[in-house]
Length: 351
Image 1: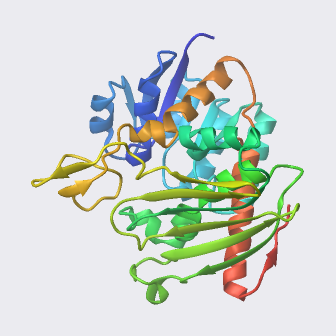
Image 2: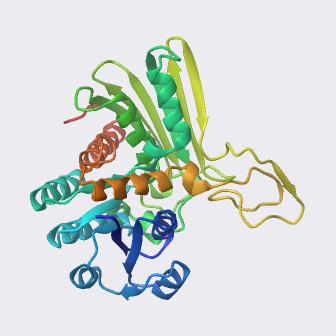
């Protein structure tokens, strides 16, 4: 196989950056897109020849090798199962599902169908974080003892993010899922799972700090304890203004690292009238900003999807951290954190 034919399910934000990343790969042809709206806009922008209002029809009619699932969280389960039934390899955006039961069914169904399930955790491909891991593997900061990381911004505009049954929760499952996934990849694995979590959240609706119309929490932190005793703190919130803030701090026995994924641009720009774009979730761009140079590259999307395409071409299973098992592990940790926040105590994580 020299070229991978891709079908996109979805037509909004995630679908757009998937199309952007695929368009940079000469071994990919975006063959079709399926969505309930916005089809003309996305197909015209990315020169996609076929459009469908029903994703099952697209999978039945089109000769595609890989499906990108870019729909709201609650739909991930059904689309992935449909792709498995159609014998299509599948990339699923985060979180893998809204419950661990659904995530486990997705993993098992894809395995039984003989199709690859890729979990789209882009932090595992972010150049800055990959360089940090190289430094750690060289012994540059000694033994890693503790990690804390966050993804925070001012809130999602999607109506599906506001309801628990369509999102799976609030900022914890929607934003903190990124640092959780990365820290499981960095510190965890089959031999070193998370064994205990302690979490706090605002609780949703009137208990939220800002977003009183969100059923899920607009602020959450979760502390993970790994089997070897290492600890990691993940934060996700919708109360941070000024643009999306993704940061990782790594503390070692002989050093430390601070990695800024979203405000780490080498550009400092002052504009009286404002510029077209700075970073995701900025309210305005006048005054001093740090405009992203290539946001999709620096956040890992481009390298992530290139890697998944290479796995399809070379018939290789995805590495730990970005496979279906990793997505399932993240959901189990998130569920334990929600239980901890509800009960006000530490909770043992079932592996």
